Image (cartoon, rainbow, N blue to C red; front, side):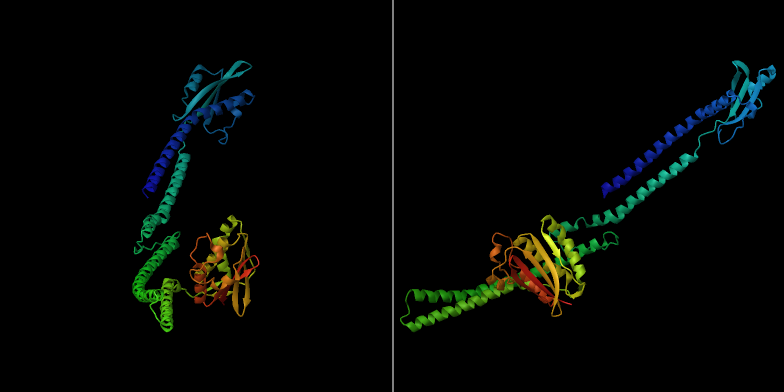
Length: 428
């Protein structure tokens, strides 16, 4: 902000300096012009006389002559006193200057012409208009700079510390609302982001506390079956049982304790994905066209850079039920999977209707999954055979299914000859 204030100050100083310099130049030119202009007009009249026009026939038209306003003639035969008064200009007003020029006819003196003219002062009308224009232009520039400072730079100046504080986890800092016509929605979005991060932080703290409690409890509960299994296994290994019945009983007890361990481990896995199952979905209504428009805005440029052909089929612009933002998350996840696990040649999105439901079909080219892997594709933390060496945690499709089911829809998949197909089921 201080740098911009200095820019405004320098703008004023440079503008005033230029105006002063231009005024000085115009004033200099105006003071030089009259001394040259009246001579030009006198020479023009002399040329007319030399061409044969009688001096008394010359009319001083104001449109042609600006400075010369009087013309007098005296022949060579006039008396000495008249000639003296003629050269002295006693019959002219004191405010007029005059000049006497001889006139020759066939190289003989015929008489004298006296030209009277005004040595008018500089014309201040043009510099005044020019000054007003320049000052108005400078004022307009300053108004624009003040507007930029107030409407653009000031909101950013207020927000300059917010991203840094958010990066440090300081999400409880309130934001003052601004009525900026340019950044009102931007400021509102940042505040909404802050509130979302704050809510997620509180949720993570609660889940972390629950998980720590669960881990401590399960750790204590795991000790008993593990110790029991170890005891019976050691007894079987050392042949401490003298009858077949006792050995079968020990093996059965080991199986029971192992089953208990499986239940405890299953509880741990369920707790690890509980936060994913608690994803909120906001019910609403949206049109297919708006969904596709946002989707193309997010992915079209990137797919063009990757040289991946994107095909969007024809559709009827129907009104769907669900959470548009969450559905965009599903589409984004499927596109990421298509780029990551497909061959990158083509992705297509088509639409059809079935059993009073809207189906959105997404297909990508590449190597399909094995049929034996399809039942596990929407399971949490599961990754297919084509995921070797590729980043991921096996939660993307699990989250997609959770979101669609919360919206009253579903998602299915099937392999193609050269690729994969995902079918999203949505309600009208």
